[in-house]
Length: 307
Ligand SMILES: C[S@@+](CC[C@H](N)C(=O)[O-])C[C@H]1O[C@@H](n2cnc3c(N)ncnc32)[C@H](O)[C@@H]1O
Image (cartoon, rainbow, N blue to C red; front, side, top):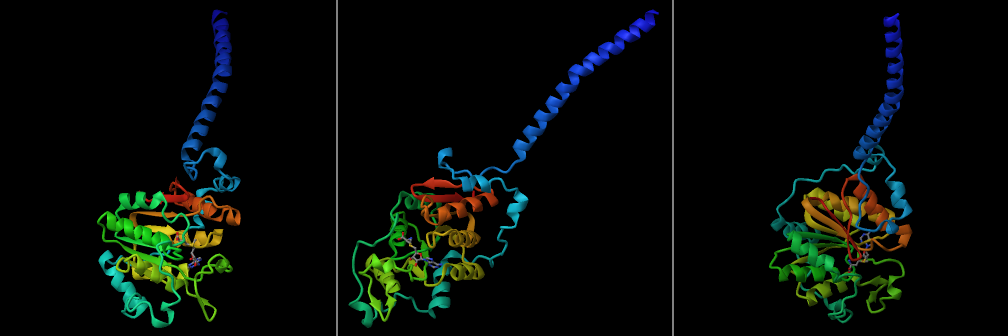
């Protein structure tokens, strides 16, 4: 009888314990799952902006899984890097048949058509970001994608001289500007329907005595960046400032990143412009998320460090 009573008491206390511990166990399991899920989720494309500045597009991007994002990866490998001191010669030989484009410049037919001025038009071309990055990275090679009249390139060349660096700056631009740009740049001469943007760029670089450290690559950004990759021309700093629509920025950032030396920095202008529904920003943020890198802001520029 006593044993029966004892067994009854035992089983009812077991039931009570189970009733208490089961929900607690479920709760602990739930908490663990949530914590693990939170820890293993990919970090969001962090920028140093307040949440108010994060566009809905960026938030939508961050919902993709890393497997989905993998299909956007550019996997082309570039050739082995050539030494930085050989880059200028390589470009002159391969692009300009062995003669510097500054040799015997300006040609007679263009001399009277070119402006000689210290006021070179650009956009954010003297921003603090250039000095900040050049001080930090001490680049041997800089590739600028989108040069126009050379304002930012000349500024970077002057900074590298000031810091005692021997830096080669390669300026990629098709020197076509954009349709209608001449409405605002009537001062750039036109010859048989051809705007002399390239010549004016050369003139500006010559006027600022930077012909030894700046070289143009007068092609579309896609073909020039592919070519540098093929030749094994890598840069410590890559600046992106050509087309500001999503597709152009996306292609330039991906191709620019391929020719970045390990530890290099890629950066660009117009993170905040609203053109093409914030095309530059969407491209940069998507790129950063895929590569698990962080987007930082310096003035109007975005900056991505690889270390
Ligand atoms: C905003 S401007 C560059 C300004 C320059 N970084 C500065 O601060 O003085 C853009 C330049 O990109 C060039 N560009 C646009 N799309 C290009 C492309 N697909 N290939 C080569 N150049 C391009 C234009 O010709 C123009 O000169």
